[in-house]
Length: 243
Ligand code: GEK
Image (cartoon, rainbow, N blue to C red; front, side, top):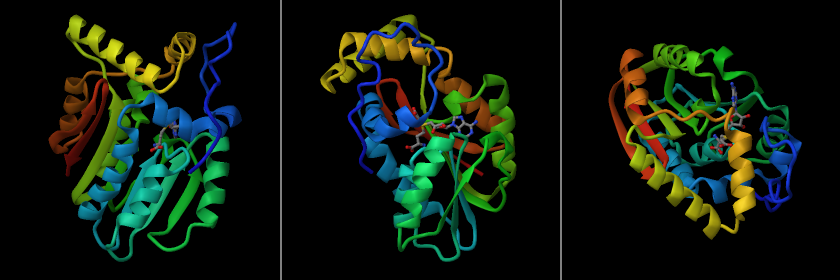
């Protein structure tokens, strides 16, 4: 999907707190996420590939926090099992509006239903694949276990949960190194030091990363097994866990 160049944080902003997925962000979103999340452009098609392997006939796929639907579209085109339906959920009106328009012109592949909904309210049932691609990190920490518990309860046997996140590190030195490397990546993508600093401030209270150990503990608590890290680039990782 195309969009404008992201220069939202290029000008000095008096107020850089309270990042919101509004119209302005939607306008630049594909550019913003590809230039901010190292590996995003690899993770998306790999989610399609994993969904192809684990989607079961006559089951549901959920893409929670779908934004403009990159993961949903990848899965829609990759999955070959019969009778599958994708529910793409986001609580940003601007995202849902834009993605609904895209889906109307999307022919072939697994059908996608786009819904404006808070994912904490999404009813999960008969799910063979559930994807949270860089979304759980935006939920209040207290709500995360409850959501993953409900997701796990709504998954069918052999179903998979795919969770991509910005993670943090227990080791202080590693945290410092990983942050430096991420900022170096953003510089290679053409972001200035001012943009990096202002985006960081804006996201501080909104995006709250956790350690890999915290994610694994949550998966086990929800009754999922064999959590695996299948991707990592600097502080961005993606995990899969099985029911
Ligand atoms: C992708 N998965 O391109 N309920 C529903 N949606 C939410 C909630 C919530 N409680 N909280 C945040 N969101 C996408 C990328 S972006 C990641 C996901 C990023 C939504 C929010 O509106 C936004 O669209 C998305 O989660 C996060 O594969 O911007 O770093």
